[in-house]
Length: 338
Image 1 (cartoon, rainbow, N blue to C red):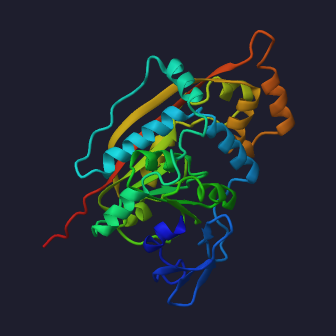
Image 2 (cartoon, rainbow, N blue to C red; image 1 turned 45 degrees about the vertical axis):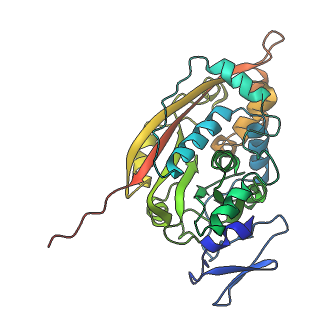
């Protein structure tokens, strides 16, 4: 909820502190930002057009696909990485390229019911948060940049049961869902390429899953010792669909661009998360429709190509999911020469 995160926000116009007053956020400078009925607020200001925002159709496809559990192994890996890095003594994440990945994937889908990132109960750790505050200790803060529906943030908050989540995205359609994804998460509209409306040094972890990366801003909002957990697609992601459907592929320069985007950070750890999925025609349409290929495919042509993948003997297509999960630490600042 916004009430949980307002202390970490600043006015995007004048950078003053914000307070929640009935149905609006206000600052001492008189700037007011109305809270939508879905519980989120837009902190996007200025006349410059924001980055490309996901459409309502893209967000709906992503919500359906993720809530069905197809990326459950990735959500679990992100949650593990976040949990390991909000503790006082950090734990290294374990390398996994599971040999029994298809069996594990099937089990994850069967368990998906509510969606793998959703909270177990209505409070889900709120007592732990209030206990910390009563003792004068701050709760761990997890920021999800380009959060989409907040799916991965919710998984992280379930793993860190005393954490607070901040989700932002440039798409209001996505943020509407993220605002309700977890009892300890608040959501707002913001553009990752602009100065973020977040105070300096408040985040324990910044999550960035398939989203643009703004290294300088991530470094500014992280607490000392904080890290960024970044997920990007691997070259074999969504094979054989990429070739058979004419989808956008992961180019060879992807990891170099990731490193450039994380200016001011050093790569501390990297692992591969890979598994096979069994997808029917509707699920293939969802995974295509939720990603960047949605902007570059003709719907009628795509439907025809998907239909050609199936026959009475072939009801599902085994599809590879492959990701790089990277932990970035702020680079030590060099001291000026005496």
